[in-house]
Length: 101
Image (cartoon, rainbow, N blue to C red):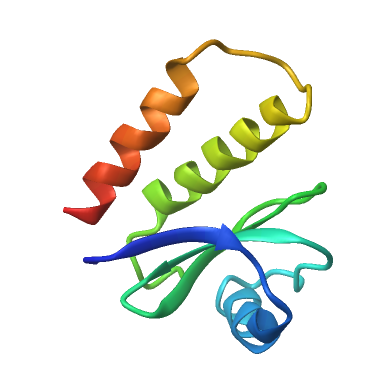
């Protein structure tokens, strides 16, 4: 994986999210989610509400799921959720940098 992008899901991601859910033997995600793309392919997704992440079982996605979870926590902090100091942001940047290499 070369270029990893973490972003909010878009309505145009619906087909890719459905494919990802089938690959992961999971229910499709409903509502807003964070997604991780690499090499122009959606490889993992995490709902912003409740529910578990889904990921392509044929790709090394454990770190991508961790990035999504960290980003979700960081978003929650920005909305007045629990604070964990600057450590979370530093860890997220380190993981993103590592995932891109």
